[in-house]
Length: 70
Image (tube, rainbow, N blue to C red; front, side, top):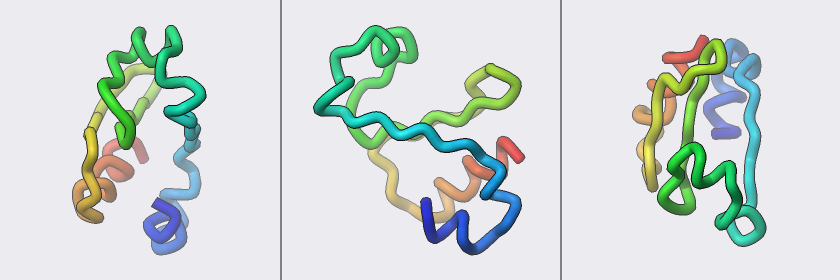
C-alpha cells in the first residue's frame, strides 16, 4: 500500500488505520465489522463500507479499492 500511495498523490488522502491482529483479533470492532482474518482490507466512504478484500496481494485489486474511495 505504501508503494501505491507513493505512486499517486490522490491516494495519500485515504486515511489508513492499521490494527495488529495479535493484539486486536478478538476485539468487538473485529466482530462488528465481520473481519474474518489477518490481511483484511476494508474501504469506507462517508462512513459506509464500499469495498473489502481478504488476503489479497494483487496490486491492481488493491489499487481499485483506493480508486473506489477517492
